[in-house]
Image: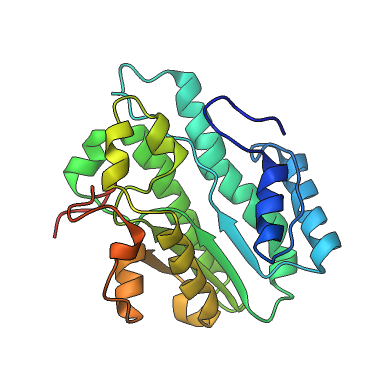
Amino acid sequence: AEPHPKLPGTVYTAVEEVQAAGGKGVAVVGDVRKEEDVQRAVDAAVENFGGIDAVINNASAIATEPTEQLTAKKFDLMMDINVRGTFLLTKAALPHLRRSADAHVITLAPPLNLNPHWLGAHPSYTLSKYGMTLLSLGWAAEYADAGIGFSCLWPQTYIATAAVANAPGFSDALDRSRDPQIMGDAAALILSRPPADVNGKCFIDADLLRESGVTDLSRYGGGDDPILDIFVDKS
């Protein structure tokens, strides 16, 4: 509800930006770890817009310290936001998604990459993100006959967000990070497809755009050698 010194804006200014772009929005202050707050957000969406057609599980916490330096508090935070938050929001929205003619749930999580490099780089963070992926794949199977498209979306490269800008020693990486618009465009492609076509799939943003005919990704920045994101192997 209040601006953060390193994170400009609030849920209210976010809604203002949505409305300025021609959309509609409603601000709900809450904590994705709390079931009652998540339910309030879902209820507000249904009350204001008449239903729910799409859910984006985007909230996430990251801590990549080695295991012996990682505090239990940070471990719990990652599991609570990444896994529990994804579970709570999707569960609360499911009754409404079932009634939608074109329902999607996009989870911002990577394809399951069991390369030992990634498994050993930050096991606890990896567990939390792969937990999100496994939930999505599990729901795709559990609700295969419900007409809901459960998919995952992950960036090929670093994205120029506040998370990158504020990470210690990472501010110089912004020039080699792509604009968040690439993730928005990729998500829009998923949402434009029939749910059955994307159900149970994990997408990389750049690959998805190339498959759709976008051959020039320079519009998204990042320079000639953008930094590959976590969990993405060099081709």
